[in-house]
Image (cartoon, rainbow, N blue to C red; front, side):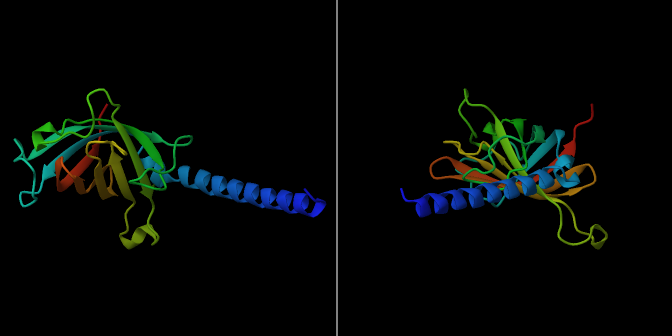
Length: 180
């Protein structure tokens, strides 16, 4: 390799390294934000099915409840097929069988990932922190996508889960901070 080629290679490596450190610095700032820390902890969650949604099998209940728990995701993956910019990771204890389907195999871990973001407008403008949660990302069964906003110590929004052969559904969810 010629001197010029080595010099160009070193220059490119230096630029790539600087870009990676810049991205890491931005990610660190995001992860330290109050919006991201707001999701940390345990949450009681309820899911309500949309009665007009097409389900493969009729649900045995319209509402089911469970628990979510999150930490800040400092060292884990930053994206999945379903979600990019992951800020939080955690687990869940929710049985979706009464809705007519499951999110994971019995021996698979109950993984949850989330992205929390603060509004671009000032807080006094009525804007709220938003969140997107994915239960069982990359699952061979159904991943559940939850999208909503915070209000005090709760969050609410819509959920959806679809699969080619597994049915699925849509509806609304409400999360409330778990009281210890």
